[in-house]
Image 1 (spheres, rainbow, N blue to C red):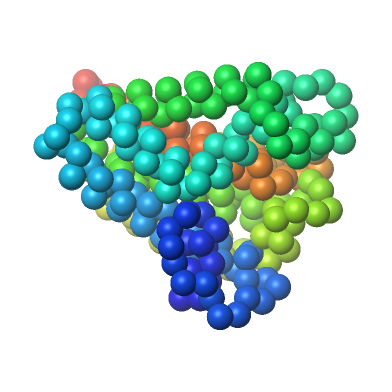
Image 2: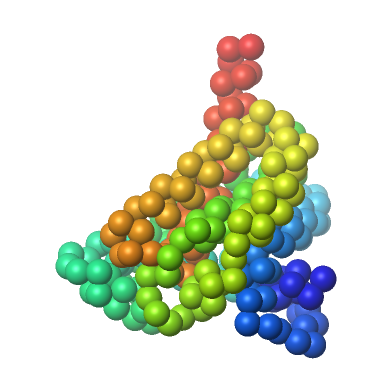
Length: 251
């Protein structure tokens, strides 16, 4: 429970009690709980949807849900997305890329990346069939946090300082196995074939992110983990809708 609270405290702004003690490897070990924290985030979105649906049309409700997701997470991963977009747009060495990501200012490319991501996430949520919407609200935050664990497992740190290093130094295959043991059955229970396709797509994405940035930067950072998580949310939403559309059309 202590490490679950650490994960919840890191991934959200929810007012949870601070653990009485925190060991050096607790941040990395807490990643086993990341999918369950994602499920909790999805649960809050589901409750909000239940409250908002009787009051507003769907397009407004879904826009409010996207905004609520950013609030619950403290926009932590959105910041990582903007930093990585700025870094990808820059030409130069590994050191230049890392320096741009560390800069607290958001550049033009980062701003464009944020706007596009939020617009696409809203549109993708709006496109989810209504009868799948509430299960999907639980599913896509869960898959995004599992993607974070996948990206970090076995990865090297791109820089010798920062919070990312603390996570990477404590995570092992055990944390990934526990996270996968939670995520895989929940994907089937919540999304059936769409959930399985979403799991496969986000897993391929996570592996590709880790491989690319290991080759480009020698490792990954916290911003890269956040970047992978935000894109994974979008991919999960797209996968659910695309799978449902294809099954309806051809079966």
